[in-house]
Image (cartoon, rainbow, N blue to C red; front, top):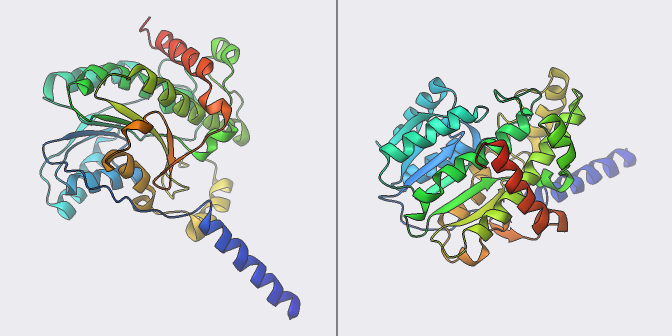
Length: 318
């Protein structure tokens, strides 16, 4: 009986420790006025993206849901309109696994939108496979599609004072690595069909997100635009919808006990979107609504610059 009591106490201590560290909650306190501002959110029809869209629409922003699934987008728009009363939430098709689709989306935005104040590169996935252009799906969607999208919309963003680019990364970037030889040989930063292999590829893509933001900030110096990368927390979303059944059996109970809900997971994104006075922190990595230090590999100037140039070439920009 004593052993059981000690065991329960130990479990309780571990649970509290996890809740206060890996699964810590935070709250955005930014109060920036959003009326008259236009926001693009990739993957805005579900999870963190939808929660972000809900909040920003409620503050008066024009919100563009940039996503692949029209049915889910229309359902999300109805939900957002019902909760916020907004009538300025729209869907524009975007498939990040197709560079052609990214170009088409950007062309539509440049033709139809008078201004763009906030680009939130939110969409992401953990999966195996290839994009339409032959890239590894995680590298292609999580990094390359967002790289091209941002690149094509930068001039539009520069027209607006205080415009921002927010890219969702992950704590998983800590385990990422960038192997340019592998990328050149396979159009991917990872290979193999085992779960741990495409999780490693996910980590690699999330490191790309941090390095992309690091380099983007350098290129935006002297403009009206700032940028930030974000770890939203460990959130219960559809991110892992492509994993196997046995993994879901393991993940679901843990998710129910510990993972953050999407609204809580959206808080750091909202902080970077709404908090005044963080412009000097452009290029930095945020978690729990605060700037965080990253390892040397996540702020390596040479690797970040090379990733930018390689990404440009892969997108047909150079």
